[in-house]
Amino acid sequence: MLPRLTPPNWDKRQLLEPGNGRPRYGALPRRKLGRSTIVLLILLRIYVLVTVPIVIYAFVRTLHAS
Image (cartoon, rainbow, N blue to C red; front, top):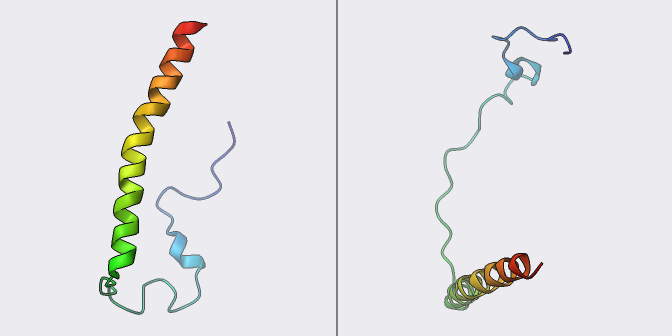
């Protein structure tokens, strides 16, 4: 096992330049998505919900076939 190079209570933020240890700005507001983007995300979610069971079924069927 390799020796520990830093003490366990060492703060990694000490390596940063002054002022880089904390964010400058607060949380950003949520972005407003357009209708086409929302429809695209809904279609993507439906695609994933349909595809995942098919892939799982094919995987399990392949396991039982061998």
